[in-house]
Structure formats: structure tokens, C-alpha cells
Image (cartoon, rainbow, N blue to C red; front, side, top):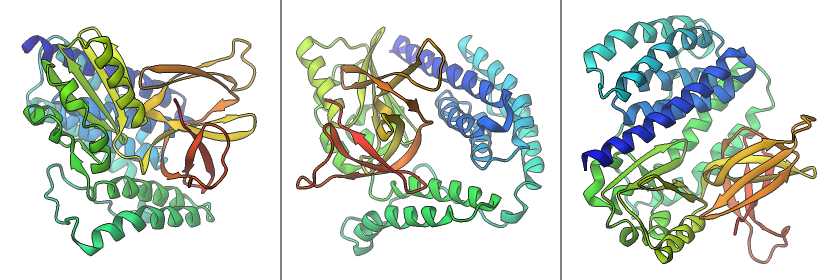
Length: 378
């Protein structure tokens, strides 16, 4: 069991290093790549939290928020902070997790510096504070509450309309408000969601604060039996996406195919690990992280849980290239004109009686109100 836990931590450290590398690249080019840097920072924060670096995780989450808001002062903090994060990751690779008081001593000065530097950038919103639900928060609404369905059915769309209207003004505050509204949309998903640990009660400690829609949990029910023999099951949630590792397990071909079909049904994919499998899927089919792209002048979108990589054409002309996606176990390559940064979008299914392009299952709506055809990957 200890070996499986170590293997899992090694994978998380690897994820953290990739996110750290991406964040470093983003801040090197300054303010032009702050949005992409925010995505790397959120992924890094999630990985640090799993590794027990809670103080650093909280600080990096604050950095991500300021990058999203386009605050220029955060770049100076990030430049000085990231070497300390890299050092902490090296300590973990050597088997040493810094004690809480040591973490506080290293990272608290950076937290104070961040607060001072960005205060002058956010004076127009100094009294506006986004409130995020606490981990383990008790669910007060039940399915019988009349406000429950109203919030779930109307909340996402009402907030979406507010974001679209908000784009009519080009002042700095608009960008800040849009980022906060986007975060509010993400937290709205938590209303009525259930813990992933319901699938694997024995591994509840290894998937704390991982939530998903109850309808999605029903679609994942085959995982109970398929993962029953795993020596270790770990899960974490980042950017509306769930990453679950099964270690100490070798499925036969029939079960492996069933696992792949289950992931395809929930807009996710599965890949083999040295000692098991990694399952990647969204926490909701109503709002999820989306990878948008252009193909022959038309906007398209795929679940970020199914995006694997993008390889630009060798001639280096424009932004065209080959995009690899994977539904369950089946990979395919799409020739695209351009891939855009991933973002969280609301998802709408197309009614059966309405005509649609071949291969399109629904539409995704971004913050500007632009519509993207969502591809159904077989």
C-alpha cells in the first residue's frame, strides 16, 4: 500500500512540475499571457494541496485569481515566489514534506507582499469580496426544496446573461467583474452535487472535496465493480475536471473496454499508467472546461477532459495544426485552423428534432455569448 501511495504522489509531483513550468513560461512574457498563466496556476494549486503544501496552494490560488483579473503587480510576486515552490517540490521528491510552521515561514512574506502590491490595482473593487464555499461545507438544500431546482435550472443561465451584458463596457472593472462572475458560475455547480467518494467509500480520505453531479455519478456506476480490486484509488478536482488514479490494478481486455466506454459516455478519457490507470472526466455535463477551436472558419469545442495535445504544422505559418483528442480509449486527430485557450463554458444539448451538423451533439456558450458547436466524439 505504501508503494502505491508513493507512486501516486510521484504522479502528482510530476503534474505539479508541468504546471509550474507552464506558469514560469507564461509570466516570462509578461501581461500578454496572464490568462494562460492563471490556468497553470490553478492546476499547480490543486496539485500542491494534494501534496500537503496547503500554505503554498492557497497562495498560488491567490496568484491565479490576480492573473485572471489581469493585475500587473502579481507578476513580480510570481517571479520571486516560484523558486520557493520548486524547492518545496524537490523536498517532497526526497520524501520530506515541510512542516506547517516551516511552510508558513517561507510563504507568508509572499502572501503579505501580494496583498500590498495588488491593493493599488483593485481600488475600484476594494470592498467587493468573492466568497467561496469551504471544504466539507454542510449541504443545506435538499432535492425537495422548491428553490433547489430553480437555482439549478435558472442560476447558470442568469449569470451567463449578466456576463454577456457586462461585455458592453470596456473598462478595467468589467474584466474583474467577469472573472468573479465566472467563478460564481463554477461554484453554482456545487448546489446539489454529491461526493465522488460515494462510488468508493473505502477510499473517501483520498478524494476529499471532489464533487460531481448526481446524474453523472449514475453514469459512472460501472466504476464500482471495475475499480474494486485496485490497491489504491486517489482523486482530485481541478478546473471543473476530475482526475482519478487507480493503482495496483491490471484489467482484462473486456473490462478495459468497458472502462473506456464509461469514460466516453461522460466526455472523458482513460490512459494507462505504469501500475494502473488514470481517469479524466468533467464534474458536470451542464458546465465544464472546454477546449475551443476553429475549423474551416466555424467555431467548435470539445471537452478539455478529451483534449490530449496540439501539434502546429511544421511550416510555422499561422496557427493551424493537428489536434489529438480521445474519447474513452479511442483517439483521433483533427486538422484545425486554430486552438484557443481552454475555458469554462455552459453546455446545451440540441433537441433531437432540430437539425445540426454531423457529429455535433450540442453547443457551448462562452463569456461573450459566442456559440461553439460541441463535437460528439465516438
